[in-house]
Image 1 (cartoon, helix red, strand yellow):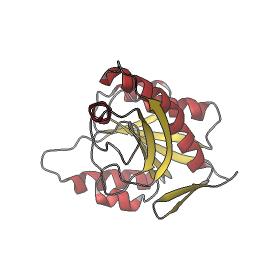
Image 2: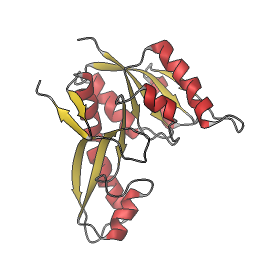
Image 3: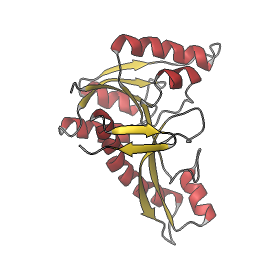
Image 4: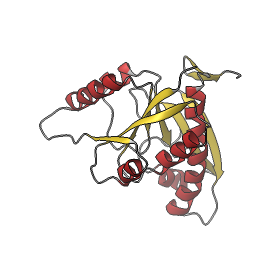
Length: 204
């Protein structure tokens, strides 16, 4: 089985990118990070990638171009590299329908809540405000909705009575760093099969 070519999209520090990088470097993933793409030229994740010899590309959206035009440029770039998997590791742009359709079931995202609960921004704050006893994180394939794609993996985190948004976020992030690389590993091993809304994990 050939190694999968991975493109990581990020906008900030890229802590989940680093976790995936470590999994790749440790031989746990049948793939390699071919390129890191960002909309932010100052993203710390880019500095990390460059320091480890990974190619980077910055696409800043102009005020005049539409979201479709912006992502069509990125699609052209990815086509030239024959990317197998896109990983959204803190990428702050909403994807266009064209890139979602082009890479259907080949775009993974992580969300800091147990979907379908608390989609969108400030998921940890939503969980605390609602008073749930458990929260967590979800890796899912991206579709046209907001955090509505088929779920690949989830992990739970207990919510403590003295939790703040920050403390809960930190504990959820620890679990993100475990299940996101695992989901990438499963994809690269061709063990994921999407059947309707369900993602089936095949035996090795």
